[in-house]
Image (cartoon, rainbow, N blue to C red; front, side, top):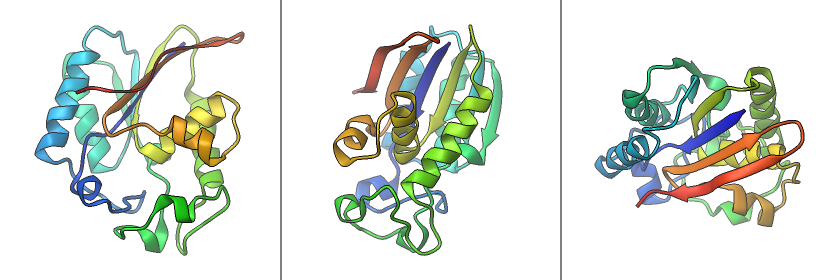
Length: 188
């Protein structure tokens, strides 16, 4: 199986350094739309069998651009939403201060809960000999990569797995090994 993971393009919240979790629905900036177009161009020759995207606007806009060059089945799902940051959504808070696998802001979910949600979804949809595209969010993709690579949620590992805005990861996965084609590559 080939798995292509794409983080959405830039939003106003990214520019301002605000936390945008699963409960906030920011749109892409003009620059974010340009990033999505560049990702689309980069992935133009990839064969995509099924596309899955978060149902939040920033991921939908990014997926729509990517899929202009493809015509796979496109499934929009809340399972690929960003970690829900509860009362911290829309606030400017240092991730380092709140980073903990079990930390949960009031009304939100923990990194462990996010990892469980996205790994359950991944295990349900993965298919041998298919290419799957997931268009999602930074924390969601990072926790999925930690799960796939069988790593613990510790800052150093998490930080290496967290993609930049419009970052692309491409993996070839079989029962015996995981081959990294790209890991959190950012199109300039």
